[in-house]
Length: 274
Image (tube, rainbow, N blue to C red; front, side):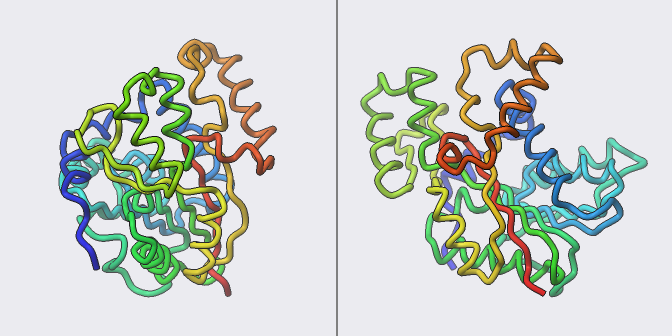
C-alpha cells in the first residue's frame, strides 16, 4: 500500500481546510453536500462513518442533528481540529475522531448505517488504492446502507483556470493539459492556488470504480453544478432569494448527465448490496 504523497500532507497541514467551506464557493459546496446527505442518509441517531472527514465540518453538523458520527482523517492536524470543534458543541459531540487511512480502517464489518467518503478519492492517485478505499467503505457499512463518495471533476481545473485567469500562466496550462489527459493533477512548484497532488475523475470513472469495489452504483450528482465559477456567486449567496434560486437551479439540472462534469465536485451515490 503506497504512502500518502508528502506534498498533500504538507498542503493540508497549513490548516486552510478548516475555513474553506465558509468562503463563497465553499458555502455552495457545503450546502449542496448537506442537502444530498440528508436526502440519502437514514434518520438521526444512525451510526455514521465520515472517512476523510477533515476538520470535522460534516461530522460535527451530523452530531448536532443527532447522528453518531465517527471521523477518520489522514492528517493529524485535521483530527485535532475536529476534536476541538466537537468539544465546542458540548451537548452534541462527535462519537469519535482518529487518524487513519481510508484503505485500512479500524472498524468492524457492517458496523455503520451509512458512510461518507469525502476526500480520500481525491488524493489516492492510483486506481487500486481508490478501489481499496471504496472496498473498505463497503466493508464497514451494513447491508443496504448508503455510501456517498465525493470526487473532483476532470474538468475542474480548466473551468477554474478560465474563471480566475490561471490559464494566463504557462505552468497552469501544463497542469490542465495533464488533468484532461489522464486525471493526474500535479503542482510541482507548489503554487498555493493550484491545489496539490490529486486525481480528477471523469464522471464515468467513479461509477466503474464503485462497482469494481462491490458497491451498487445508483447515480452521480453534481454538487455545485456549472455555477461555481460565477463571478457574482458571493452576491447570490448573500441574498436569500437568489441563494434559493441558485440551489433550485442546480436541483433542476442534477439529472442531466451531460452537465455533471461541469461541477467542481461530484457525489456518487452507492449502496452496499443486501
